Length: 468
Image 1: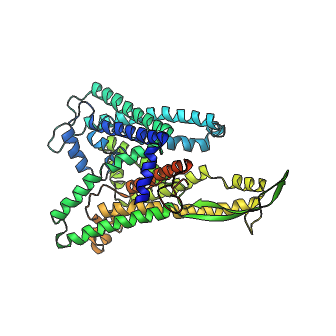
Image 2: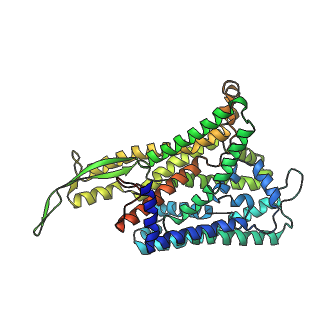
Image 3: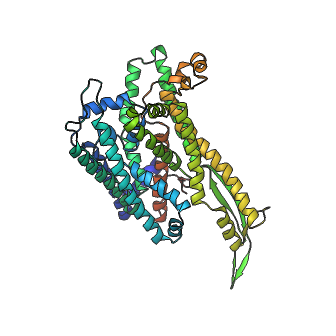
């Protein structure tokens, strides 16, 4: 404990590091300030009722990444989702469009150009999403027949598009400023801050269920079970995020002038989850597209309405698509950041080799084989972590399957099909983001302290983040 207190003292004793930390906290406070500025023309009380009726739908997914701003439709209601979606599209285009691929290989100048394209695309997506939200709200009524919008029409649509798009662009600017002049990844910290502020609400909800004996005589055991499950999931996330496969690499001795270089044994660390929280974030972001379109046009098409119901939170089709997208983006992201052929060529160039493996093509195939297995394990781990808490909350609706639904409805316990009805704020994706971003930020603070000849947060070893 004294070691931890001393580390925090060292942070604020160093002017540059103190300024970075305070700058980051200040911009996060500005972001949270926007959570209390509503979009003009909205009946916020009726909007709260709409969210309570549509829990587990696309509304809940968007609200998660907006830090609760979408629930109140504040000026930051779109949150970071347009930027995430734009990043997905640009990274996919880099693979299929030679122009973007050349830009990526041009170094810092090319990356700045791609970042600029990402900003433009973020604005375009924000305009589209804000238009969709405005149209949906104007055609949405509460259960009592009251309208959500006081004065619907073109002026409300334009005002909503201007307000939400400006808010999304401002959040994007905040994230970039934190990344450049603060501590940690700005976009990740904004999502982190939006999720963490819901902790008091989650604790209050759990306390209310305990006081009201939500599950009868089994309520104490259920509460203890939920808390223990959450601690186990957090420990499991930390264990997997720090897990890595170390491939031994031997470097041959080389004589350069009067110096003998090489000759030492080192290792190549391959992480079990190289993509971090990127795959579930990308998967959640892509799932909002068909659900947003269905939310807008489902009333005009019976087939679209059925599809919208089939991909709701907890439905089997939603689960299958979500798991598939997580595993796909796990492989996709690793394929972008890791090139086994280039790594094998660099090892051979500097006289390195893996014991028992011939340099060159054999080394590349060996690394690629190990990386494929690790990525598959990492993708399955991400899917389990993201879905397990969601199943506890809402269950998995196997009774809605076309052929076997009646059998599951008769022979499966209700808590599996309907969940425990615990509206705990930290679901799988959000819990993964909170733990992962916290580990990355602490690791960067640790690196800054060590660089300035201070001890870190731990007495032995070093804190390892996901990007270490």
